[in-house]
Length: 250
Image 1 (spheres, rainbow, N blue to C red):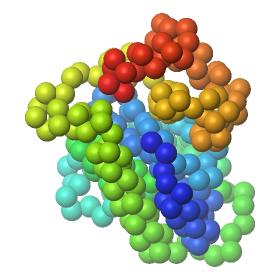
Image 2: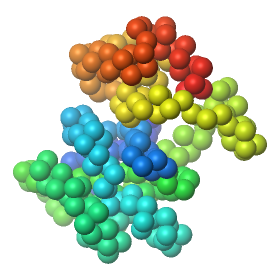
Image 3: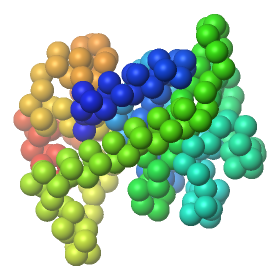
């Protein structure tokens, strides 16, 4: 899913107004032992950092989506948490790889907001600054929290609208509501968030140049992602990819 121009514009304005370096919007699926990610919007975070965040399993240690904390206390927890919030700190050593990672990348985590869409599935928006950059002012936390709350609501509404306006999506929703949803293809679930994004754009009929622009990566990166996707799925071309995804209900 690609965010609308309105949502993207709001996210960019939020970064500028709150004097931060970046925000990143993703779905964190923690229903399996390894976290599965779906990046919805990246405003300032490098593609390489996001790739390492997922590939090295840093997302599994992210304290802002720690299921031991969030699933037990989600009803009474505010959506936005600063990096120094007690709820974040109580993750302790479980979050050590995450803090080591952001320190190594010279990222100063301002905080993150989490909307629980379903048990162990979260719509997450992180806010960051860079340690080597000078800023005009301290972060206006209340303004940032309000803005992220609005952004989160816009994205959740857009997700639901996209689901209901899609024939397969609407059918899938009915199947879920009726308790008859088909099991997901385990090979498809083995794709990374970036690979699933590229796959979705291919299924939408996008060419490599268009995919590169929409995903904000190079055409070379698109080609590399496609080669890895083909290898994982045991196929050799785009037509076979579209056919496989259609059969899997992707």
